[in-house]
Length: 295
Length: 295
Picture 1 (tube, rainbow over the protein chains, first blue to last red):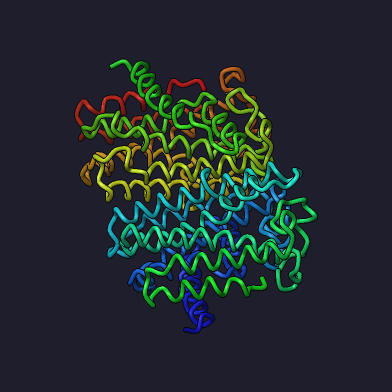
Picture 2: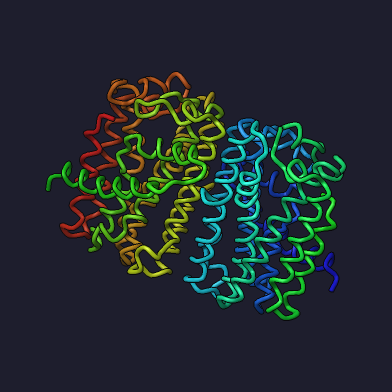
């Protein structure tokens, strides 16, 4: 299979949905513009695509769950807007463009984030759009995503990250931050696809293991790119983690060991899928592709 | 019926649940402390109590839906934390105590708000705790609460409020802000009680009308208290709306007309309940009680 074509097609499904979502005017318009600005800032839609790929691995048809998958991009985008705020990471640039608060001001950026987060749960619960999924399955997915995004997941990881900025790197803390801040929502994206498809326990267990492995690999590779990548490709100045005294894998283990670590995690992710047939090929290809990414 | 006893008993049910919710340690502890600080800052729990009272009006037993009702307090508390931030209303005092960001810093306050908002949806979807409610009814409630809290409700109202701070008061804008910022979540609280009880369409319609009326009355009375109340009783300096050039009812209509308006709204709320029997007496008593409140 051609993974680039697969990713492009699935990304297009999500992009079209996101574009149409805010096409009718919302009051106040500035709030609308602020959310759309960050949603359309060129994200790779990796979380929705993982959800779709997991749904397909379990025999589903991607087109049937676009709103559910897209809700993950709302949550991811909200987390970027809030993370970039002066009181948090204080970033001026995101994906090569000024960050949300630089354009719309801090107050509106906080509200755009709050709005996207809340709208994700509205989309998930608004099951009038795809009645083929049972309410009990949707409830499980909401629970899954809320758990991964909140205090036991992303918010918890970001809080620990904020508290650790000037501390000496420590293996346990680093693992906690990355598992919560990044891997939790990636794992939930994969699991949600499985839950929406009504996958059995063994398959959900394997999807979880796949998600945890690529989720951690994603962060390790991000850290490596911050050291080795190019500003133009990254969309943010390289070395920004170092400047902010962030704990990273390269800082803790060195670049070479970090690269080995990423490779091991990707191998583990692919191995976890050995109970799936060829319908899981996109999931396997995504894992392999992650090792090659440059931004 | 004795409304003060009723309110106290229902508030105790909610308070006990909220207290036990964060009793096991969460990492990082500062995030935990920040959320608990604002949750336990002496709120009246009016939204959860309205949800319980509506559930009881439809024949339910308050004890059966405590987690669902309490989720409304998580959302209300998150909105207060974010509203108080320097980039928003920039308030140092809330219910007589330093605001969250004054104690925990802006970054942690933003995260505490994000955490409470997300945890509300976790609690709502975690239906293992009360299996008597059908998943389809819970989904309706999540949709209801997400709609009222998000860009079509509270977040939209707060955004408009932020954009209007230095503008001249205008009736339409004032109505938009209050309907979205305050009345939407109060209406959703009442409706959610009815939806959880499986009320019929006519009853839900009446509960909606009740909610809209008391929701708007709540805000009108808040505005009046900001002019006439005492700092010690309010827990915040009186006249703070005036200082921030906020649009308010007294500013637009004068104090006397605002008081009449509040009375009309309360009368309308009680009238809407005329299809209910004596089980709706707490809802009626709450409406009457609102006219008497001093803080």
